[in-house]
Length: 90
Image 1 (cartoon, rainbow, N blue to C red):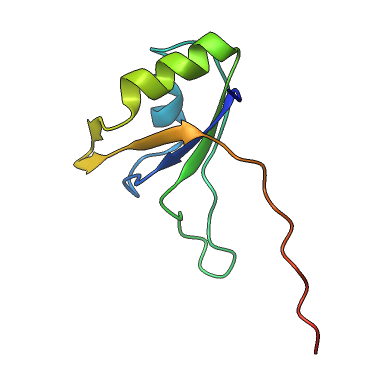
Image 2 (spheres, helix red, strand yellow):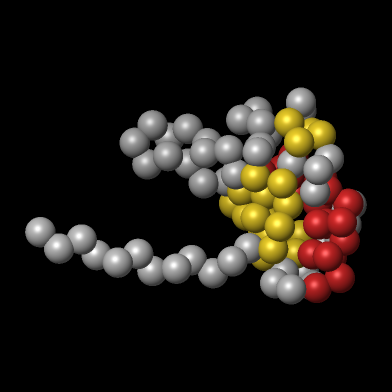
């Protein structure tokens, strides 16, 4: 399992420090990134959390997947590498 986790179905009220505090209950957090829309600057409703080690990542998935936070049920899964998108030919 990867130590980087995908966290989906986030409340738009949550920020990086909120997620770091939540995930720190499962182990040491290395980084938290909440992507924003390029045009509007609004949060996109998901995040990536990187844990220090495998055990912390597994504990976070076990403890937080399906947990309700700020009225929304979290989706926590190991992150998959970004696949390259084929370029459109014009």
